[in-house]
Amino acid sequence: MMEREKVKLPRPIYNVLKAQGFSIHGIKRDKGSFFPITTLWGMATVSDKSEPSEYEALTKFLYSNSENQWLLIDALRYGYEAEPEPRWGIKAGHSYLYEPNDKSFGPDEEPFSYSSRYDADQVIVKLGFGEVVDLNKVGKADE
Image (cartoon, rainbow, N blue to C red; front, side, top):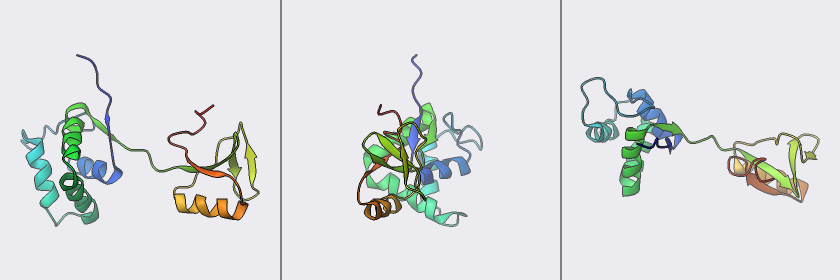
Protein backbone atom coordinates (compact mmCIF):
# COMPACT_ATOMS: atom_id res chain seq x y z
CA MET A 1 0.00 0.00 0.00
CA MET A 2 1.34 3.40 -1.00
CA GLU A 3 1.86 5.87 1.86
CA ARG A 4 -0.43 8.88 1.59
CA GLU A 5 0.52 12.44 2.34
CA LYS A 6 -0.96 13.93 5.51
CA VAL A 7 -4.03 16.08 5.02
CA LYS A 8 -3.55 19.79 5.68
CA LEU A 9 -6.34 21.20 7.85
CA PRO A 10 -7.15 24.78 8.82
CA ARG A 11 -5.54 25.64 12.17
CA PRO A 12 -8.82 25.78 14.19
CA ILE A 13 -9.87 22.34 12.92
CA TYR A 14 -6.41 20.94 13.67
CA ASN A 15 -6.61 22.38 17.21
CA VAL A 16 -10.02 20.79 17.87
CA LEU A 17 -8.87 17.35 16.74
CA LYS A 18 -5.72 17.55 18.88
CA ALA A 19 -7.71 18.76 21.90
CA GLN A 20 -10.06 15.79 21.53
CA GLY A 21 -7.19 13.32 21.46
CA PHE A 22 -7.22 12.42 17.78
CA SER A 23 -3.75 11.30 16.82
CA ILE A 24 -2.05 13.32 14.11
CA HIS A 25 -1.30 9.94 12.58
CA GLY A 26 -4.92 8.94 12.14
CA ILE A 27 -7.97 7.62 13.92
CA LYS A 28 -8.60 8.18 17.62
CA ARG A 29 -8.29 4.85 19.39
CA ASP A 30 -8.85 5.80 23.02
CA LYS A 31 -12.08 6.33 24.98
CA GLY A 32 -13.73 3.48 23.07
CA SER A 33 -14.35 5.54 19.94
CA PHE A 34 -14.79 3.24 16.97
CA PHE A 35 -16.89 5.76 15.04
CA PRO A 36 -14.72 8.80 14.37
CA ILE A 37 -17.27 10.66 12.25
CA THR A 38 -19.94 10.29 14.96
CA THR A 39 -17.39 11.63 17.43
CA LEU A 40 -16.66 14.60 15.16
CA TRP A 41 -20.35 15.43 14.81
CA GLY A 42 -20.69 15.22 18.59
CA MET A 43 -17.73 17.56 19.03
CA ALA A 44 -19.25 20.03 16.58
CA THR A 45 -22.49 20.25 18.55
CA VAL A 46 -21.03 20.60 22.04
CA SER A 47 -21.12 24.19 23.23
CA ASP A 48 -19.41 24.02 26.63
CA LYS A 49 -15.86 23.57 25.34
CA SER A 50 -12.98 25.74 26.49
CA GLU A 51 -12.43 27.21 23.01
CA PRO A 52 -15.96 27.78 21.64
CA SER A 53 -14.74 29.69 18.58
CA GLU A 54 -12.74 26.67 17.40
CA TYR A 55 -15.72 24.38 17.88
CA GLU A 56 -17.89 26.84 15.96
CA ALA A 57 -15.26 26.75 13.22
CA LEU A 58 -15.51 22.94 13.17
CA THR A 59 -19.30 23.13 12.84
CA LYS A 60 -19.05 25.62 9.97
CA PHE A 61 -16.32 23.52 8.37
CA LEU A 62 -18.44 20.34 8.51
CA TYR A 63 -21.71 21.91 7.38
CA SER A 64 -20.42 24.32 4.73
CA ASN A 65 -19.28 21.80 2.16
CA SER A 66 -19.54 18.04 1.76
CA GLU A 67 -15.94 17.99 0.47
CA ASN A 68 -14.83 19.11 3.93
CA GLN A 69 -16.44 16.02 5.40
CA TRP A 70 -14.45 13.83 3.01
CA LEU A 71 -11.33 15.82 3.87
CA LEU A 72 -11.85 15.02 7.57
CA ILE A 73 -12.36 11.35 6.77
CA ASP A 74 -9.06 11.33 4.87
CA ALA A 75 -7.39 13.21 7.74
CA LEU A 76 -8.50 10.58 10.20
CA ARG A 77 -7.45 7.75 7.91
CA TYR A 78 -4.08 9.04 6.72
CA GLY A 79 -3.05 11.57 9.36
CA TYR A 80 -3.19 15.34 9.36
CA GLU A 81 -1.22 18.47 10.03
CA ALA A 82 -2.06 22.14 10.31
CA GLU A 83 -1.91 24.34 7.25
CA PRO A 84 1.09 26.64 7.48
CA GLU A 85 0.56 30.00 9.14
CA PRO A 86 0.09 32.82 6.61
CA ARG A 87 3.35 34.41 5.51
CA TRP A 88 3.14 37.41 3.21
CA GLY A 89 6.20 39.02 1.66
CA ILE A 90 6.97 41.90 -0.64
CA LYS A 91 8.69 41.26 -3.93
CA ALA A 92 10.13 43.70 -6.45
CA GLY A 93 11.53 42.07 -9.57
CA HIS A 94 13.58 39.10 -8.38
CA SER A 95 14.25 40.55 -4.93
CA TYR A 96 12.38 40.33 -1.64
CA LEU A 97 12.05 42.88 1.13
CA TYR A 98 14.22 41.57 3.97
CA GLU A 99 14.52 44.59 6.27
CA PRO A 100 11.17 46.38 6.56
CA ASN A 101 12.46 49.37 8.52
CA ASP A 102 15.15 50.42 6.06
CA LYS A 103 13.37 49.12 2.92
CA SER A 104 16.20 46.77 1.93
CA PHE A 105 15.63 44.32 -0.90
CA GLY A 106 17.88 41.46 -1.91
CA PRO A 107 17.62 38.41 -4.18
CA ASP A 108 19.60 36.14 -1.85
CA GLU A 109 18.21 37.30 1.47
CA GLU A 110 15.55 35.61 3.60
CA PRO A 111 12.34 37.57 2.98
CA PHE A 112 10.70 39.43 5.83
CA SER A 113 7.25 37.96 6.40
CA TYR A 114 4.02 39.55 7.53
CA SER A 115 1.26 37.46 9.12
CA SER A 116 -1.39 39.79 7.65
CA ARG A 117 -1.80 40.50 3.97
CA TYR A 118 -3.30 43.85 4.91
CA ASP A 119 -0.06 44.89 6.64
CA ALA A 120 1.97 43.90 3.58
CA ASP A 121 -0.44 45.80 1.31
CA GLN A 122 0.04 48.91 3.44
CA VAL A 123 3.82 48.71 2.98
CA ILE A 124 3.33 48.49 -0.81
CA VAL A 125 1.22 51.65 -0.66
CA LYS A 126 3.98 53.45 1.28
CA LEU A 127 6.75 52.20 -1.03
CA GLY A 128 4.85 52.89 -4.21
CA PHE A 129 6.12 49.71 -5.89
CA GLY A 130 6.37 45.96 -5.48
CA GLU A 131 3.85 43.18 -5.08
CA VAL A 132 2.58 41.13 -2.16
CA VAL A 133 3.33 37.41 -2.50
CA ASP A 134 2.33 34.37 -0.45
CA LEU A 135 5.68 33.12 0.84
CA ASN A 136 4.16 29.72 1.64
CA LYS A 137 3.48 29.22 -2.07
CA VAL A 138 6.29 31.02 -3.85
CA GLY A 139 8.84 31.85 -1.18
CA LYS A 140 12.33 31.55 -2.54
CA ALA A 141 11.36 28.46 -4.54
CA ASP A 142 10.27 30.49 -7.56
CA GLU A 143 13.83 30.80 -8.80
